Length: 547
Image (cartoon, rainbow, N blue to C red; front, side, top):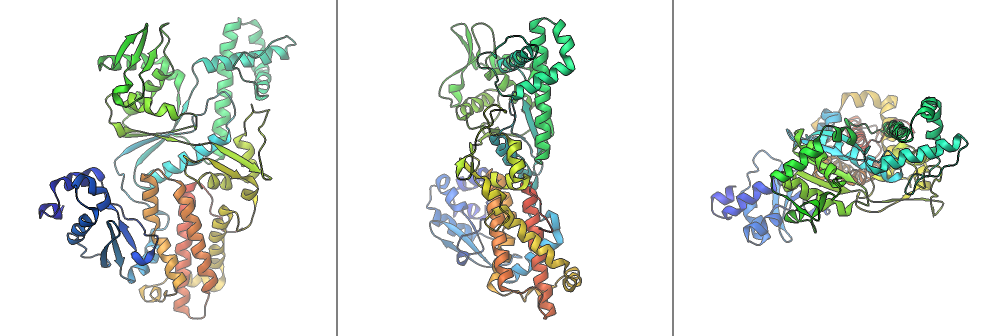
């Protein structure tokens, strides 16, 4: 802003700054280039019509760094602005972490902004699979990251309990129920074949069999569908809770349709002039908002397509006051993104109000081979089977080790190992090792007493300084992961932090005779313990004190 006022940057720079929002600091890979850096100049080059390096130089000239521990700034490369901090700031990091405790890494960047994250939302027609488990880990961690950066977050699960799939579910259960009565029956084409359908039919017979034998066929199918959906949703809720995922809202599509929301949404779109009629059907002009073709909302027979209820659902979301809505969808939904974003714009909401993230497929590898699918569960790899094999912590951590838009090979054997080769064990062991140190009789008193500035100034060994720098990165890592929707950055950071600690532990004896140095190293170890626990908590992974 100062550079704009003094005429060194064009007025467009000020407008661009407002659009870009805060210029977040990043950590250079090469620490010799600085402790922190910003790429603001690179992002401003287009709007300003100036070389990014020159913009960086003007930004540097306009900086007011009074009161900050910055000893030197420099412009590097194509337009990076690097900051070198005074050595003493590292000492403050350790003290700050111990003072903040569980709050370390949190910020208020999103204060006052309501965000909804909808994820998993599996059809209630079968068990949860490993892709659903990955979506659960990613969605829950993303929501936790947004909460840690100050956003007002609500987790939502959409129950797809309406439409032809539910009718097929009811008829599939009826076929198996009739077989249990000794009558011939077959599952309808496109129905559900897993042996879990037989389990539902048995449970239905036990609870509703007498009534079902008196009921008419269609009434019976509807009742069986309702029974099956309730049973599957209950199972999904229990399995997700065991996985550490709790939703604020479970939203029923059937109830949405009962309220007339679909009809009101169609009327809204018609009133806004975004629909037209062709071949007896009602179309939405989504091409006006970037879609590759227009979409049918109501078929010529008067039945709505699946697109219209989905639009009504998102209209309902925004009517609840969310400024931003994030949908996590499965790997078969790529073609769905453009039409949904176009529909939201047709309803009058900003282009960026809806964000859609695709969670890619998971391949389980066990014994060097792809894991076998469960015929009993409907030719899927069930979520509960994986969690039973490797445990909740390993499952969640491994699901977060790659970006959600990348295919994931999940090494089941590695996830079960209790060795340093297993990333989650490696990170948790660092936390447990520190906890063990702090429990030692000769450490407890000094750990409680803490370390003052003079004692912390004794931390000068390269591995000590490297560990403190890694500890200092957490606030930027949390903010960056939240704003970029990249929860996988947390596991990478956790592994790097554990590596830095293990190196420090191997090179610097903690419980030395020199008491001031011992207090300083105990404080550093405790700050590392706090930071590891905070990162693991965001991931939904435990931080054990003993292993």
